[in-house]
Figure 1 (cartoon, each protein chain N blue to C red):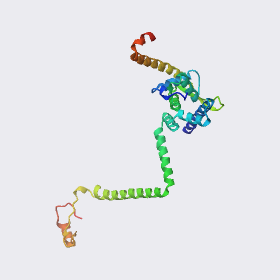
Figure 2: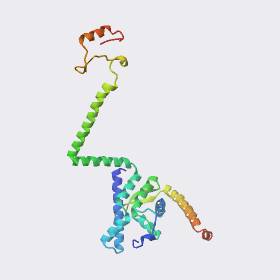
Figure 3: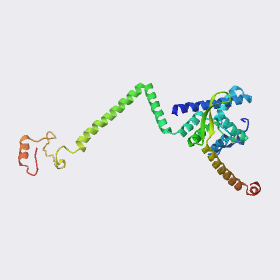
Figure 4: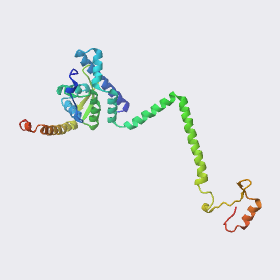
Length: 120
Length: 154
């Protein structure tokens, strides 16, 4: 993980971290560290998330009512805060996902118009 | 939830996060020291992250003002000599200002306490020997009786 060269990694675009957090929490409640790990693992370590930046994002999502925090016990039997997707958050995830797919399709279409036909 | 509790919970969250990362790193075969520094590096600037999280909570400006105030009080109590000099300087400055303004206000700005103060005139004689305005007593009495152009003469 940390042995990978830094230049193979891509910095997150503004605003995408929120989407990634929501998507990760769709699989069930998780604490901060687990969310960071899941994002790294599922992106095959390409996405470079400064782990700490998760926390302002989590608190922002709480404030918007998209996730909620509950007290729980971590795997090493400590009290830890677990974050859980709310109903409002689930709806938001759908909206954000389709927005993102639209954006990705549009950019892909511009970058290689020829290949676009066969792909989607 | 109170601010203090939120602050404590954030501290705890971050501490917990770092511990998990350190443990993962050790399991991957790092030495404890390397695991610790790798976890910190990966987490980023803790103070900045806390600052950003607080900004999400809101009231940052008020909090910062309160922090500045506390800092000012601490700095002043640590250096009472300077604090005293600063306080005396301010007191003198404000006092002088108030005194001068008091004089200016009553002498220049406020109309004299007579009816129709804008119609007042000042009549005098000038004595070149003493270089001052003096009026001889008899002259004054004459003016008082005979200067009919003035409504009232006192």
